Amino acid sequence: MSAIPYRVLPKNNPKSFEKKADDRNKMMLIALFFLPGFSLLFLFLVMPIFQSIFYSFFRWNGLGPVDNFVGLENYSRAFADKVFRKSMWHNFQVVILTLLIELPLAMALALLLVRGNLRFVRLFRAIFFLPYVFSEVITGLIWLFVLNPGEGFANVLFKAIIPGFENQAWLGNIDLVLPVIFFVMTWKYFGLHMLLYMAGIQNINPDVENAARLDGANEWQLLRRITLPMIADTIKLTMFLGVLGSLQVFVIILVMTKGGPVYATEVMVTYMYRVGLQRFSLGFGAAVSVILFIIALFFSIGYQRTVMQTSLE
Image (tube, rainbow, N blue to C red; front, side, top):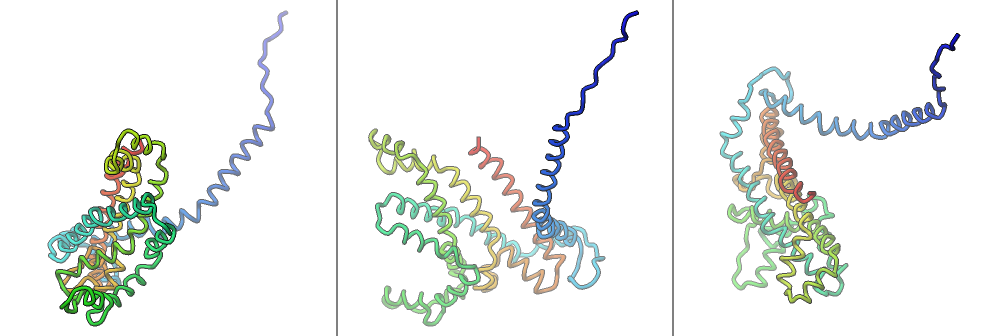
């Protein structure tokens, strides 16, 4: 009589159970460390976004119940307001000036400090970066004293340089105030972009530049053909940061002009602050914040997918 075949069951390996237990413990430990960060992210970023979207469909003053549903009326009201359209135009102007003036200035100073064979490079780098360390409130207060319409430093300086110069109300002149505000913003933020450019330039292999010089390339050709292409990723990053920063500018304008005079420096965030908080129209202010959020979101997604993604590839 033949033996009945049977299958030998594998014995459980104690080490496999220990490995699975260790993996579970590691995942629980990782989740425990991530939980505080995700909780803060949800409470202070995700939840306010959804709350703003919800409130934007109501006429609400922030005090009573949220029950006066108006649909898209707050959005149509915003786009129908000339002041809001002017604030969007001011934001667009700041974006263009940032791309055409602030970033090229930062690039020029970075090239000068890296390749200019200057003495005391570290001192100059610290001086140029110092304004970025100041808070925006301190920056605004400093320049309020400098631009004082009476005997402020700016008027005293121009009187000493230009004969017959008369005191200027720098923050009271409708034609001057926005360029002056942009100058203050550039003074504060260009140091960050300068340091980023300096880091990118210093990472370029000197052998590549020396080989180009041996082939007869001049400094302009070296800049166009080698330096700028090799720091293209840094340039794209600074452009991204510059545009987003220009869309969100708020504190400097609030401290120095509060959006005036006659809405000459009104931007979307100051408009939102004025109509939403100062006039207790939080539903309308929420709609303005959602519009700004959508503009920044679409720019961020589009820029990363079309510009920054190409650099990664």
